[in-house]
Length: 366
Image (cartoon, rainbow, N blue to C red):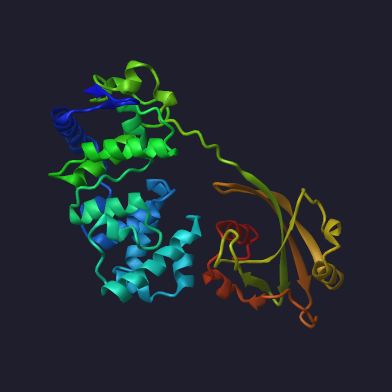
């Protein structure tokens, strides 16, 4: 192994040895995940989309539900988007579900239901980045291309000492070059599964058990005690704090809801009349400059749900308050634009943010 300008580069024989040890570790230690028991590109693609930004334990039931409801790409392509979003409810990042539905239709419409077989072709589909395209191409079609997710970045950085920022252009080039050298030409599917699994359960982000690692004899991070410092990721996540105020307009036990449109969170899901403030608000009276709310408060009977809900998204922290506004059966109501009344049965099947679903169940409405 020789040292390049920034990291250790394995030679041909060291690559062979690395792959041999990695495969041996994988065969002894890997988890029997459902999507590893197939080479069906549809099932593999489904699992990869569901597992983006999602833990395996959380994603597995969704994978099973989607396969039960949509066993083939043709079934998913025929589905109504609202049904797809409802089945996705609770996973977050709903753009994944919309892109998945769009791509299913694209595969059926443009490719007669057959997935492209190379990473280059797959990466042109909506919602498929370099990692997902490479994963499908290698797992389903045996293409010798490296699938590099966060786990793989960590493994390569620690073992081979890549200290460049993984988000920088220089870092991306170094990781890509090393990954290309390491990928097994004989069995790329097992290699990629093994690298991902090794990062997921052995070379974990915090306090890895390096004493049992099969690579501790060559690992740069282990030798120099840099496990907590690698990989280098300079970019800091900026979290936006938002104060949201929902008003549940109720008449004849029906609730006024609307489909969220635009580019904000939860596009395509249903919620209630919403106002947002720059700072925390304790009473609707503090928002009486909103003419629609002012009319609703004048005609209806308001009651507060006495709890501040906190909902955490990757880039946002939502502080949410809810109020009921009840109307008598004979009252005339001018609903806010885009809103309509829905029965309990209709609301039950509407796709909703998990926060809204939780609230309705805690209020014993659903």
